Image 1 (tube, rainbow, N blue to C red):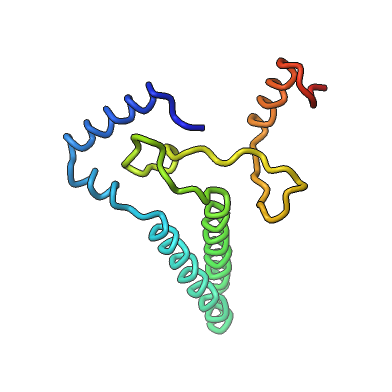
Image 2 (cartoon, rainbow, N blue to C red):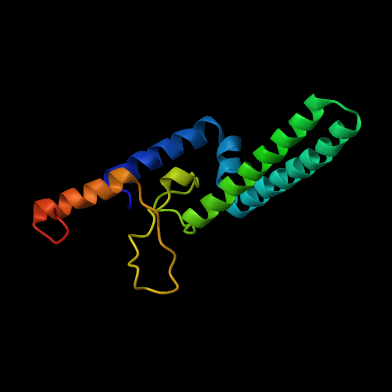
Length: 149
């Protein structure tokens, strides 16, 4: 959902205040590329997974259960970290900022595309939260449209 005019003005005021207070930080944040952040997260996940894979047999070889368990836990956490990064990438393919947003904060980007019908081949299905579905059903019911049980 795009930002309203009032929200855009408030955001621009916040951005100007941030730039006035700490221009170095504002320039750093403005220059962050989402692809670079994802790449770094994937590299961290791979490095953590490799270290975990190495620690698991090393712990078994030196007969230290703590090292083996630590390696397994590290491997598991690295996998979950990489999977979370991959999932975020699939959920938010649109990285363009809303008008007036130049800092690039993820929560300030344009909304996700609307629901996708099942009969449209080639388009991924967008997951919607419970509250979002509930609100849509409420709106349809209030407007007297289809689907209002």
